[in-house]
Image (cartoon, rainbow, N blue to C red; front, side, top):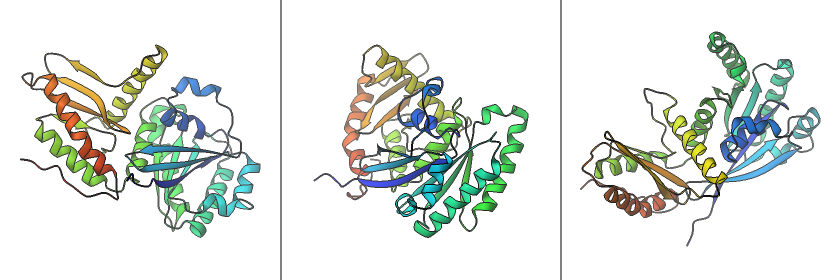
Length: 303
């Protein structure tokens, strides 16, 4: 029998014009940054469901940030909005001229979260950092982060600097989603074992979050593939898989499970493409089982 979907309620909040809907559209609706200019303001609350890793579903509530709506969230809609929240993502426009009001609304959100969902995780995105002079970004973000952590007590918040024009947006959202995946350590362990079994240099799927020399490496890969998929759609072609090969390596991108793709990088030219593709296909059922958090906890073992 198919497993029941495990929904995680995620609140996306912040003042009107802070960039909430733009970032949601880029991450989940295949928009590119320049196309978000035509998006209008969110009216009240927009709901969307995004499926990850089998039965994990993000129930995303994009809450309009106009003053009237914000006041309603804290009064007449308080229980409905803030009950059963797994994650609060609060977006701040780094160049806002109403910082005091922004902080007031944020504190009101925290009070409602403490009352209704005290175990919720809190994330703050200091957004539109591309508008800040490059030599000032570290200082301004550090100051804002310190203020937000102080205001958030006794709750803890994790802060990210973000912009729709670079990889920081992907980094923030991937880090947030990563924390919602219940068996992520087991998935990563099995990916490492899979890489060893097939003698791959690297196997990458979107539930990885390890350190690299280029801290935005995975986000860049994600963005490149997204742009390629968009190019395919403009030609009315569907993207399923691809192989890139030269004298130094071969990289394969293929459907892995019902909601994920995988990239396998091989530097051994003697391994034929067909063998790698067969190995990916044979691993699918195993990883489909791992994605079902209520299913059996099998491991992919070395032989």
